[in-house]
Length: 117
Image (cartoon, rainbow, N blue to C red; front, side, top):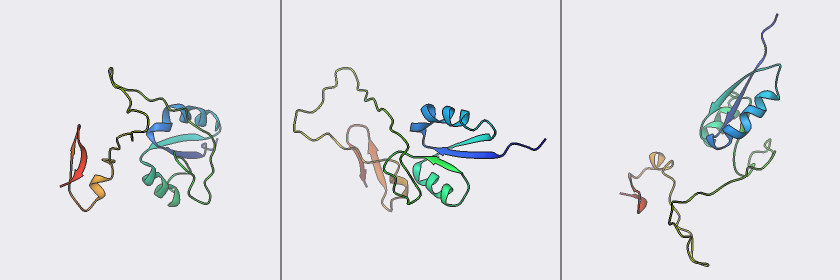
């Protein structure tokens, strides 16, 4: 008996719990492997043929990409947290994931966020 073909699916951690079990069930004749990574690494792996399919959050920017659904998001806050007053901007925190790839050194603190040194 021939071995089942392998299908490698990449996903960000955000989509993994909800989407990957259903995807695996949708390919009963395949051996399904999963790769959890950041979106940029998954896009590279897809372009290089190291994964067969990628679930990514955000707009479908690649020509072969297509939106296939929506994920419900739920926001959580600490007890006692109050949202900003109407019309006030919501504080923005820079992504710490970008810090290592920047040319400047970064200092990140919980209350003040991340800033170049």
